[in-house]
Length: 186
Picture 1 (cartoon, rainbow, N blue to C red):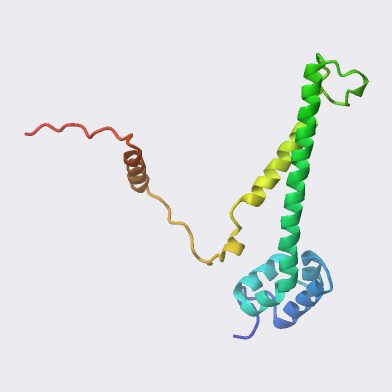
Picture 2 (tube, helix red, strand yellow):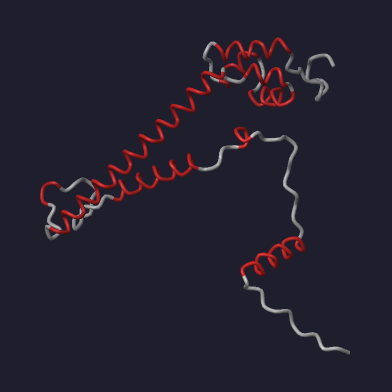
């Protein structure tokens, strides 16, 4: 092995010097795209090199202290975002309750874009929904890289028969499978 990517004859491969230049640019604070351009290759080329070269992958990774601080900042930001979203929703509910109790008279306090009868703001509702989706995304399972993804492992394609067997087993477990039809003896 020459240390170059020999996958495409006639194309210049990403060698050790280009990898070192790319990592040095990242350490200086350059964006990945800019670091790749500085080294003379595409960012996707460096992603491929990272997949094939475990030493380059380790050099590219952020230092452990940064990764830990990043996780802590995300957790803190998540808690603050959740608290603020709930505070805003409770304040909106209190305003709505007050408007209903006052006979839907909002007077001069009516906000721009709000419903004249109840004071409800569709933009604020949409923003709350976007915030809740963002929070739900944080609650999901960790992404493949965080779970220890094993490369090359693909899901097996299901056949129709496999799907029917699984469906029958699920229906049987739920007690929803009708009894098999009676077959007359010959």
